[in-house]
Length: 272
Image (spheres, rainbow, N blue to C red):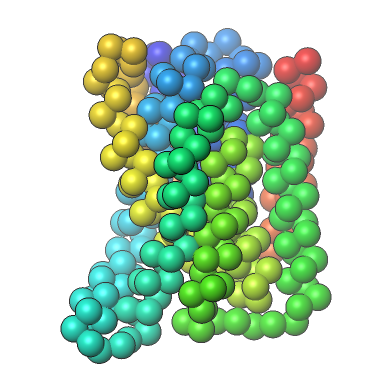
């Protein structure tokens, strides 16, 4: 893989992972409709994709550093017996992370096989858009204004179940979890914030599992491209987060839903 290819994939990752368009879906489809030289088998491609996601996680951690610091302080206070809003939110993030972590661990090998199936990824991009449209409509009809600080354990787990969908290429993690959040009645900006907070631990956990594989023989030559792609992804993801946190103060998922469906249809057409 060339440096240019790695940087290009990092750019796409930094945009599509946070914009609810499924970076995994796009990065699975792209090698099959372009002349980019990438290792498309799951065993080789997955560690590289995880490296790109780690760049995204780094950007999210930096962007929300002040908030993470408050959450960790709240956690320390919590284990000392003092219940705080920040400590409670820390545990909500933990609970929301558990479903995807368990499913990813149990079905790891089956899920990695999907990284070589671009048609499936394109079809799920269309489904991803439909899910977001349903979430938009659902939120409009609920007429609720649930605040993030009022989220219950059961509700956090429900949002976490939506994150499980993102283990399938084509279904956006941010799109699924924001949809789950607004479906429960969260405001869009709160749903986006919770979605981005949830992303950091699950991506870091995947990194601990997959990144060591970049030094193995089957992934020879991917260490430097992974580093470059991850750095580009981190920079672009920080800019994407900055934009989206402002965007969701006044806008919804509808535009991204139609873009996702269009990308899926285009992907299917180009593959065939």
